[in-house]
Image 1 (cartoon, helix red, strand yellow):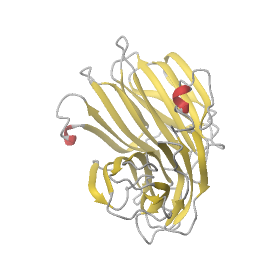
Image 2: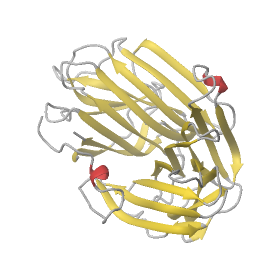
Image 3: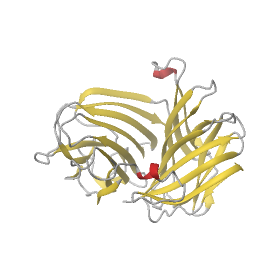
Length: 172
Length: 196
């Protein structure tokens, strides 16, 4: 297992791209985000999209399948799922401003190969109310597109990143 | 395929000798026998933004519940200030109906649950891991998120996951694993920091 790249997230932007981290060297990757906060009071989810190896552009097609448990401290849990969404939700929890930092761990399987890409993640955040969330998700992209990078993508387009660190590891 | 072919923390045996294989950097491990509180008071929170804790525990009391409390600058937070949600999937019953499974949630708990149903039968134990986020940042809340497998009350496999938060900005410099329900623990707990 090897640290491939670690970056401080850009601030004042809606998303942060990390390019050229997936390759033929590894089949599985682990992506860890910690200390993720927002730049303003817009509480929102911290999602992810993959970046195409062909041109580093984000995969924005309706290719993201997922199932997600959202465990909530103040109420009963909920489950969401979709077979054709445009991102994986809450992979890194979510953001709010102030002290309510989010984070999460995403494991990706075969993003670079001409192969389906599987994902599983757990994330937390303490936002809004503030309300605690523990997220547990699984996902897949059923295509053979080669992906070489990842985008940390805030759910609300008006939301801005206020800080955080992302680390990408090659597992095996 | 080139590169490492094993998980660092698997090879490390979760504290068996304190190996450091690059990413999961070993901090401390404790093997206990009949102990109520398992305290980690040197977690190097100024070095690591994310911690990984693995445990394998059995308990003097059947169906005990492993929980965590956090130390803030050396003082254990024992008040009912933690928020948590914990979800269990069991191998018998209506597994296809997620609504039939058990979950527990609270905004005023005096602990965060991290493990279920450590038992006292021969060969029985509860094992799992949890991450700790943002412990060392005095401006942030510290959260915990984990995954557990054990035997349920009917001797069936039980998978559980969930987490919680200490919703106050502070420097967390340690944690305690204890049985919020149950007795003393026997087993091993190992702590790693994630290199970033």
